[in-house]
Amino acid sequence: DQEEKSLITRTKHIRDASSCENNASKYLEEAAYALNTQKALVFLPCIQGAYQGSSDVFIAPRIGGGAPEPIKLRDPAGEVLDSSLFEPSFDPATGVLSTFAKGRGLADCGFRAEWIWDGQAFQISAASQQNTCGGVGPGDWPTLYRSRKR
Image (cartoon, rainbow, N blue to C red; front, side):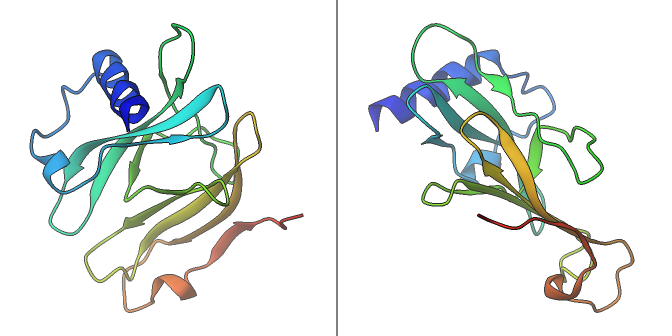
């Protein structure tokens, strides 16, 4: 608990929160997760909309004096995404980081993706996207990318 608080506080000091809402942390969790003995994943709430929110995501050193850095995630085409993720979640047991950006409240359009921690960085493992809203649920969105787990 103490390390989590310290990581969150250190990350807040370097983040530019000028475009974030003050009340986002009322609905979204501030959190820190150990990735290994040297690095941690940190979520800082930023925006809360009517039906979803976003958090700024960082990789922070757990030891030493290094500064946290905004996460660098790639989409299936290899392009670097913004470090603010919609509805981010992390499963420490599997090392999977995910995002789910609804195009509207019905979740009949939007973007979903997962990345797996490989010990050094997050690698894209799955992505799907539905550009046109119109009654198609997230499980039926076109798959853009899917990897095999070994």
